[in-house]
Length: 281
Image 1 (spheres, rainbow, N blue to C red):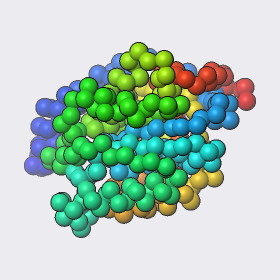
Image 2 (cartoon, rainbow, N blue to C red):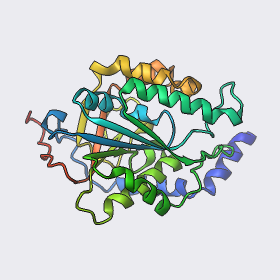
Image 3 (cartoon, one colour):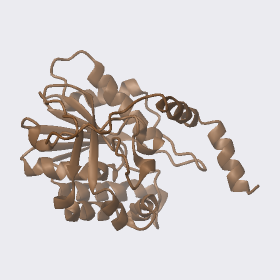
Image 4 (cartoon, rainbow, N blue to C red):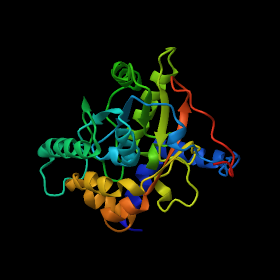
């Protein structure tokens, strides 16, 4: 057996997230999802004046780039909170010490393309992967929740990673858990919380879908594909990674994610109507 395969098996055998995924996959077999339910179009939403996006790394904003473009077109104030500066990602010719600065600049350019009004880095270090195992910053979820809480004041809606971290990335899961703690705390001004990469039957990149998160909102990215591509291409150091995700190059990633789906995790200030059964416009 190849040494790398043995190392991968050993690392997975000691990774609690691996077992968490196995349990979730097993339980999902006994759950029922109404995938015929019509997702809600954004034009049925009330006015969204301020949105806050919470992500783990520079480039994660690409997962919701279509919705960001649409919200900006509608005059929404956009704030993005980023857990790390991506210091632990692929270097692609940069030194490890310089990578955080490189990726910070890349995200600033990407957010400018998407019309983001405010970009805030939360100051946590992105750990370098150990073998086949990617890691989350060493910050307790309670502390991260406390750090995020103040930024959500006055927000109508908050967007974040989904319940399985898209592809079970521990930093994505950390962000999800921290936002959940904030939203679950008793506060009458709690914003509506939605997560990206929700269930989408037939998604061309199924390994990047949060399959336990039913789709509530669907965004057709056709009007924004050019902006989405320009935003992704700002992340020059990570383009090979997105090509790997898509099984081609980074342009394929944009093409294959031309539809975004969002799960409604928690009602908040917005009075959003329920999605209709399939057949109702």
